[in-house]
Length: 359
Image 1 (cartoon, rainbow, N blue to C red):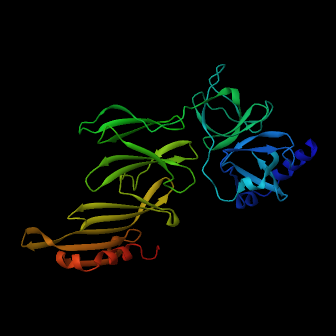
Image 2 (cartoon, rainbow, N blue to C red):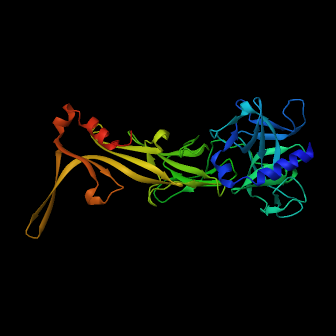
């Protein structure tokens, strides 16, 4: 059996990379966060280890109830019901490198002291455990590189809660909060309140839960900050838009369109408002559409005198496509007396224009 498994490993290593990438599968244990990788396609065979939901595998031998897989450098069998083409959230816990005999640990390409070394991460480095072999090794993701570390040289990170520590305050009286993330990373942000609501949501639709913090709450608007998990670095990154936007007002997620919408109530019972639609570009949000309802302003030039007159009784509603040049970006525009807007369904028209061609 060992010679057969060794041959299968060799053959799998020779598979074209395009084939492996075009057919990704993942472990999904359902109610169980880990499943057995077994030597043979039977529950009576020895377990080679336990692997967490969300860990990727390569399929090579589908036998109905069982499927042969390559996970890391290990070849074995997993029950077919625990494999899916839809990537689930990663259930593996976070650990940190903790070698009492040195300042680093070797990340090896297979679970053996003789295996080639892929990385030498320092003590304190965060790694995500994807599985644990039966002979004392952990299969981990270290800053986007997968390999094996001795389990005895890893320390589990305390389970993250949602409590923050207040470090101080800014000159404009915002509290400075510190939060210890699930990977052991210290995240700092400012908020108007000393008590903040922190939760986990997959805001960028990649199957991994991100950190969302509600930082400023008003009568009509709630502003939140996003910290998305970056697979490559193993760190949480604050989300920005065009390098500036950091707080997202009354956000709503549209995973079916890969979009995040925000809505700001600017007053007058919502007659004055701003809608923005953002699309993910890496770890940033790119503004693609906006709908602005504001009081109409009129510019008047008399000789060298410039006057800007704001008509509080007239609404100016504009929908723009921010992927186009500014002069060509207007998709829909309306100037209408406020009293007419209250009786005419103009905001339905506004929303239809905002979402035109998207949904």
